[in-house]
Length: 504
Image (cartoon, rainbow, N blue to C red; front, side):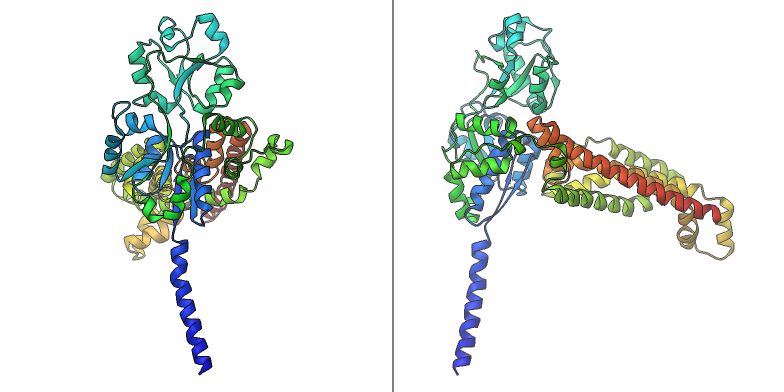
């Protein structure tokens, strides 16, 4: 009797434990960030703050520009990300600067979103130049650029097309310059080396004071306030109440000087985003060790994340090429069998190859309703199609007519002739197409990091954001090495197949 009671009590305890455990572990928060230093840091601070409550928290780092991150938020691929008031008003909602808060929130609710948790600082856009250029050309305000049409202006890609970026600024001030696009992380180096004369900056960037840059006064008050806030899905507070409560405690905790200091720790002292966020949340500001600051290329390449990034990169390449084979071989076979269809198939596949990679990724996010691996694999599969379809059709067409007729004479069906005669003989040319597709995909897969799919592109994106050549090379070199390994593998496979073909 006692055993039965004890057994029943144990069963009841197990059921209670199983019932309560999901409630405790159910909170899951996915944070996004754009591809610049400050966004990386803030995203990491938010993710680590949520994790302190026991929530499962992931940080999708450096997901590209605002359009990509916003689509990810609207589709539910991420739950929140750090944004700026001026961007919400002008760029996302197309509202006038200084619109009433209730109007902004009402418009966001229509999209299933909300804005809140002002972090305590403002990070505005501005134009900057070197002190030498400012003195020699008499530059003090943005309006002074009107009299200097020969100055070389280069601005970030996002600023070049934003509603509150260069188009509106040049119209307001009547600026004659025609700027070129440059990655924000590279613009400071370009200024310092005199390759450009003027660029756009964020006012909390650490390199402004380091390089002694002159910020041009926005004398017509074109730029709105860019108070740092969180843009989040409206259901997040109810879906993850504990994590959300901890996140809201960040309100007002980051002032301008603290944000500049954290940016400097990343860009000037070489600290990782995770360490910077952890120190902020713990109330410390540790300095990097000499070994951390002078990290060698070898240490950066084979760091703790090397095998994770390698697995992710290989998974992206393998899945994309496999899917391209499943689709491309049948399409190439149809193109070889039906000349009337062949030109159309090759034409369509060729056009798909011309779509800009980032544009295709951005378009796939709302279409598939997610970010990360799935849209990246779909995009990479599209780019791998052309060499596989083309080489399959070419290989099948080069099989001698007499060989095909011999199969028919033996009573083979068209399917058997294709499978047992034509495809094996076309295999060397098909393998060459797969080799081309694989090597191309290894390089193209680096863009997958811009939508949170990982791989070596994660380091390249961080290196660009930080203007850190070592980090950038730590992503580019393994990617190039992987491409060479695949190239050598397929070269050997081609030689083996050609040898067997000649023997046959």
